[in-house]
Image (cartoon, rainbow, N blue to C red; front, side, top):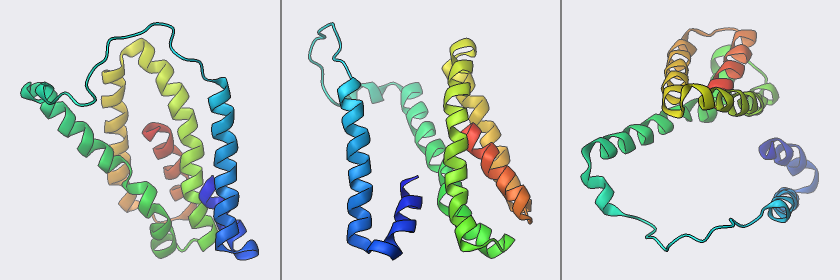
Length: 162
């Protein structure tokens, strides 16, 4: 959302003020969030920020590396879908730019719907299935040659990545 606002404002009011307007919007949203937050009622014992002893467990270490690499791979389409839309599909720069917003908007469905599913099927099971679906979508991305199919890809990828 904010890149789209910045892109619309920057030619009209300049880089500096477009950046300030985006910052003011973010500040307003954060102030609302801070006003609505409540502290935790129970006090917990102090703990370390980073416990390196946990990495002595091989399953934990492998899981951490796998999650890191998985999330690095999940965000590749967010960075390259605009360039792909312009070069391969021939989309206009404006529509190619909005494909990222389409993915972000559809991820709202994934963040709520798949979270509801995770409560019933288990968070790790849901993570594995949604990651596998994203992998299949990412590998099928190379076969997309039309703009409507790229928009459908953006919607589905946003849902399952969310």
